[in-house]
Length: 474
Image 1 (spheres, one colour):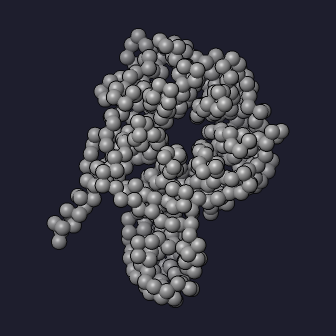
Image 2: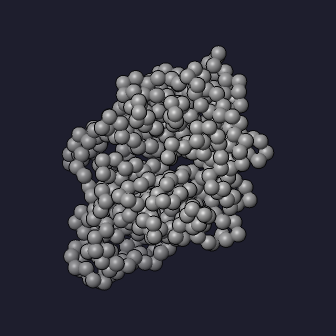
Image 3: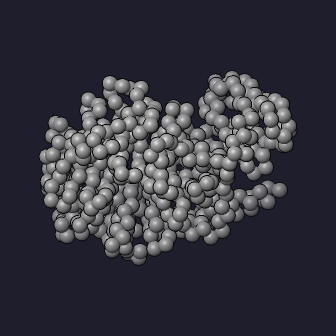
């Protein structure tokens, strides 16, 4: 019996590993990936210094076969090989008008004050004017670079961009820098803006901010410019720990992702979609055991891929990465041990899906470090119709209480017949208790002996997840 179980475990681990293939070995985290579609090249940036044994400080280029250094990277002196600076990082890289730009958090670039915003002149990196600065003149933080309508946008947490007053976002038309529709400073100091998008005739910015004089109001973490002023988007993305990480347009909706939870009043868990008038929770969204931090969302071949702190997608077990097909959330065959670390970026390149981030693949293959490509060798999609009326009715018929709970957790089924399996999972996803019940009525779980903390109560009918409730054990 033990031999059989060991075989099943090893087969499962190998199967998961076969779905992902190595691309290269980075020594540290990749923060973001940019696809230069004109030259069909990928740019990687982040916190790394070594790529496949070669020195490449924080930024590199890949043509599908070879990784190339770009100058000497962001180091203080190109004439020597310095020790890596653990306090600096490139958060984004982009190609605009045949020039490579990079932003992040860094200063001294080959003897010059880079102030977190630089460009490559074909031979060396150089500052973009005065770069990004605080009110005190210190170098500030850049988060993201984006090209919209042939203009380059830089988002971050700064007061000035190349000497122009700008509240954490500025744009460049190829000749001059300017602020973006006078984005208001809605807090006493510059707050992070993490992304900008143009959708349905309006501009949207998202980040980590709120209207200081109206703390409980709708201007939480997302604003819309309607042509004359910046206004709230519905009730915003509220919550003291919430933030908007980015935007992606898919199926004529603006998808907003980051740190958000319906329990804190946000329109979705990790992700929500705005159609111009109202929010959609995208089939129940994406949930983790502790937080819901979605790091990247990309539309690829008619599907919307999402990565980050994920354990469940619309109730379907889908650790780290999942996709939305317009009606259902689907997993990619991962389990809790497939990736060690987060997936920060998803991109399509040469008809392949490339993921990168701070992970290593723990399923038997130590050659995959911080970057991998999807092969789907033996992949069988696991999807759930979380948006169906039947499932919503089924879910509504159950009550799980009390919450928080001390020694007894009760489950009441008011309408649905059939057999159900109940699983109690701890914060790591480990099943700590299982039981079954049938028909309409009540069922209880004994929580005595369990440590205080966060648990998940999962009720299943066959292979379908009917209810997934976060429980606090007192």
